[in-house]
Length: 246
Image (cartoon, rainbow, N blue to C red; front, side):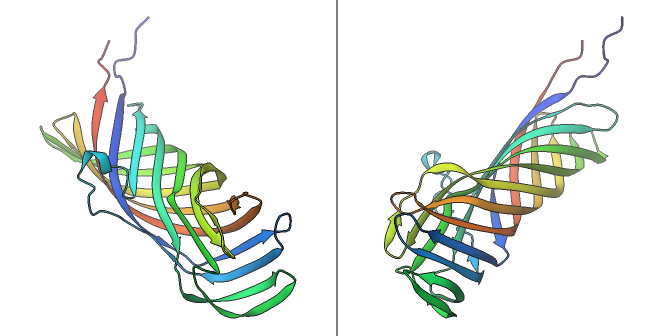
C-alpha cells in the first residue's frame, strides 16, 4: 500500500484590524426588575482600535486583534480548515440623535432623541468577538525560490462570545464573557509566503452579526438585541508548520 506523497501544513496567524459597521436597530427591554421596552432606530456605531501601546508584550490583546489556527490539506483543491478568533470592538456612538420608540417606565416615547451616556451607553469592546470555523481556499498566483504569492478566500460561521459594557437608565453593567448570538462571514485576501516557514497576509472580511442574548444591568435581567453588518480589514503575520513527507 502506497502512502500519500504529499502532507499538509499547519499554520498560525496573528494580526490587527480596523472595522466599519452599518447602522442597526437596537431593542432594549427589561420587564422583570425594571420597566422599559424601547428601540433605537438606525443607531450609528464605530470601532476602537486602541493601538497606542500594541507593541508591548503586556498589551498585545488590547487593540482589535485576530488569531487563527489552521491546516491546509495540500490536496488538489488546495483547501484548508481554520479556527479563528476575531476581536473587534463595537461602540454605539454617544451623543447622537436617534429615533427612539417604545415605553420607558410606562411613559411612551416615539421621537428623535439625543442619546447621552446617562440615558444609554452600549459597547461590545472586550469585545465584539467572532469565534468561527472557516473553510479556506488557496489559489497560488506566483512563486520563486524564496517566495510564494497566493489568493486566499474563506467562508465561515460560529458563535459570538462577547463582552458588553453598558449603562441603561443609570443601571451600569461592567460586563462579562458569555454567548451573545451568531456570526457568519466571507473574506478574501492575499498571502505572501517567505522562505517556507513565514508569511504575511491581508484580508478584507464582511460579516453578518446577530446579537440575541446581550444581558443588561447589574442584575443581568435586561436584554439588548440587534443585528448589523461589519467590514473588517486585517493585516497579519504568521508561521507555517509543514508536515514532513513519509
